[in-house]
Amino acid sequence: MGHIIVTGAGSGLGRALTIGLVERGHQVSMMGRRYQRLQEQEELLGKAVIGIAADLAHHEEVDVAFAAAVEWGGLPELVLHCAGVGEFGPVGVYTAEQIRRVVESNLISTILVAQQTVRLIGDKGGVLANVLSSAAQVGKANESLYCASKWGMRGFLESLRAELKGSPLRLVNLYPSGIRSEFWDNSDHVDSSGFMTPEDAAAYMLDALEARSSCHVTDLFIGRN
Image: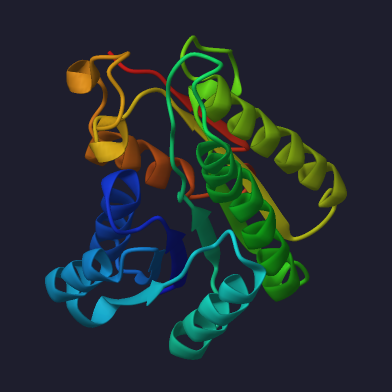
């Protein structure tokens, strides 16, 4: 039974990934900003999980959260970074606070979580998996701010991959198209009713993260039907 850290675990894809990992026999340290959501997961999943409330866009909170996770479950074999937010609308409407929130929650959290993961298991080995988006591959109208943060994540992670060449730490980037969740509640530019379910996306991702003896997935692109 391995220990895994999942960020953004309180809702949507992060929640589905957590449930799927527990069903596969893992212990999960769940990280998220809303502790009430994490408590609900603890009540559902029992001793296989622990909830750790943290804003991962802040260096000191990342340090404290990862220390708590390691104290509970030991060094993780997988860190699955799924935390993130979106703000939508045409260029010109974004406030300074919205810009800061998206960049911090998506890009800065990715950098801080990656740095902490490299410190913890860079020499030991394991997997760092990041959920990006199809928005990291193509620009989308009314999603310029979100795309900017995701393209920034992609640039950082591809550079990190080059640095990790020859390291026992594997890097996996996950690119799902739209996922049906509360993520889209503050948007009216898309109809998310036909998007993929968090559970289906999570199942594909967890299958892909199981390395074989001679190969492993480096990037996974998931399109919706």
